[in-house]
Image (cartoon, rainbow, N blue to C red; front, side, top):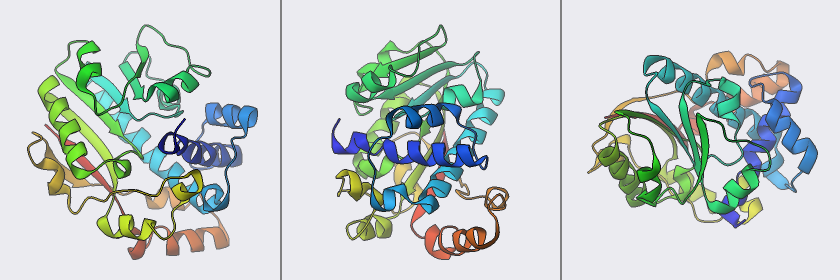
Length: 261
């Protein structure tokens, strides 16, 4: 896999780490994969603070996805840039038509650990290529998950993806996490993804940027590190995390935006 693809090991490790500790997120599949493979990570990419942060992010995406499926049970679920994430298993939503999409090399790796079912498929595709959209079933609405992906795409590429989704589905619910331009600039100095060979990332100036020519409407900014997850940390760890990873500086670096069409 190329360097961008290898970034999937960072959140995988984080989820396995917290799951084993019994906090924030229960992810048996991440534990199993990590115990079996122990992919090589080094430096900040294996930081416990990053593990807490990414696991909170994933737990927030989980809650949002489950709420949207309950609200729109006939929607197609698209997890774009899924990596080795087990969200489809964590949520236990067997009735949803769920599609995990990622580069062919990632899906090839993913199929070592996951099996397709009547309602669950894995699609090998660059998410910028609209061809995979033509293979999806007819549905009015799609629930679109873009977690840990946008920072590897330019604003124009993100706009193009959203535009193609809008042409394919008359209704959309989208959740996407984004770097700010300041975070992207700082990443050139030090970022955990540097440890797997990625040095070019991109930021989104304002949520309105991703509305342009996409058919999407910005709904709200969501919290990446809700207090109820921070409260699962104890003592000194809770103090450090709350000060450095959930404070004002952190919120200037990383955003979570919700859109609808």
